[in-house]
Amino acid sequence: MPELPEVETTRRGIATIMPGRVLRRFNVHEARMRWPVPEHLAQTISGHVVQSCERRGKYLLINFRHGTQIVHLGMSGSLRSTPLDGDRRKHDHAEWLFDDARFLLHDPRRFGAILWHPAADGPVSAHPLLARLGIEPFDPAFTGDYLHSHLQGKTVAIKQALLAGNIVVGAGNIYASEALFRSGIDPRTRAGTLSRPRCGRLAQAIRDTLGDALESGGSTLRDYVNATGAPGAYFELHAAVYEKQGKPCPACATPIRRIVQGQRATYFCPRCQRR
DNA sequence: CTTTAACCCTGGAGGC
DNA sequence: TGCCTCCAGGGTTAAA
Image 1 (cartoon, rainbow, N blue to C red):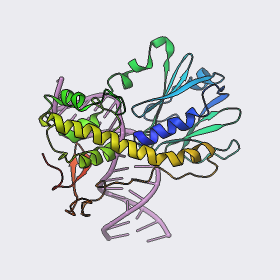
Image 2: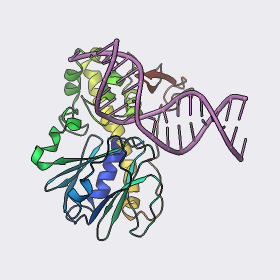
Image 3: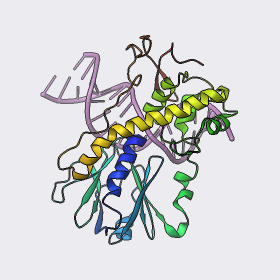
Image 4: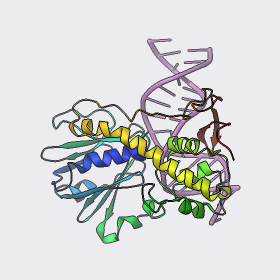
């Protein structure tokens, strides 16, 4: 599933092509996504020049002078360049056509979204989906102090506090488990009880976990731009604990445990990770 | 405000 | 081989 590293790699991929080019045609082949794709979006943006491609959390932002296209990949989505004359496959729901490039949004489960925010409505950061997002994990302001102060008073488990996305974005279900393992924190720990030093280690672990994944995605970026066939789905995951229940902890060989928190699977080492 | 659960959807896995 | 059931998961939304 696309987590922040995959989304950022996707952003870098489209950012090498789209900005400065005229979007000759935007086609919607299946409007039933997380929310319906706006009916008039195709005519709203077809023929307009892409200004830039940004990212906020896991949202891709394709900027035009008159507004921003907000794209989310959900949990099964991908947005890739494809040959101009290639066939559309099942679940290719939208396509961006340029003179010399073509991009397809492929999303079997349709948890993704394509929305439009007119520039007249103000900055896209004020959009309801973006307004309450937490800090970016690679923002220098994301420190142990920041994390510590924003967790104060919270009784929810730290794993769920990370997933909520209103404190820090980008740590999805996979990387939340991995970052908590790296920092030696039991995922069930009440968020507000974490000490300042442990918050520092956790913030660093989140950056490292996401950074490592992003780095391993760098090699797929080249494939992305020239994609002629079907590139590998998502990044190869080098997980220490995710989906490793029963397997030995890489650090101490204690069997990894799987629990459910907020209807999501959590994996952790009961020996290395403490409350 | 906080917490919990339902929901959107399809492919894959497992049972029979 | 086929049919049925169950489950995963990001993230919004409604309900408690």
